[in-house]
Image 1 (spheres, rainbow, N blue to C red):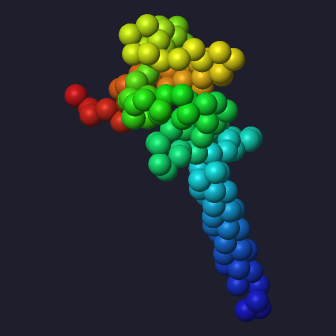
Image 2 (cartoon, rainbow, N blue to C red):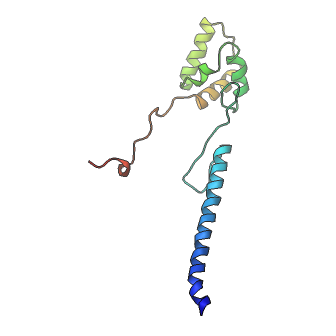
Image 3 (cartoon, rainbow, N blue to C red):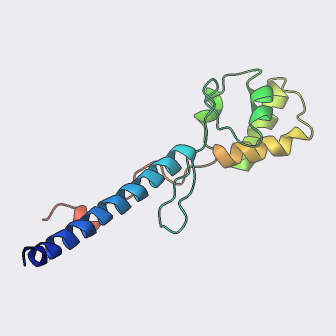
Length: 140
């Protein structure tokens, strides 16, 4: 008779423990995905965190070595990271450097460099945070 009264308690406890373990497993996979810059499939959460080169501060992606070789030869890579320009604007900047700063012709490297710069250092959608949800606003 005593075992019958304990079964609902034990069942509830097992459900609770299962919930906690599921949450912990999801949270751990989410944290790991954020560290590796992966997207969590099957969820509405996206974590895209590119790898940054510790010395230059540039994103390590296709074209990184070309940008490092051609651009950092004359100026700090921080001039790249602090700008956010379209592909056309980056091209105008390269042409200006070629005409006035003695930048050499980039040849076949130019489209790769422009792809890299416009992808990782392109225009920002917004420098401001998104608007707060109505339920988070103070009541008037």
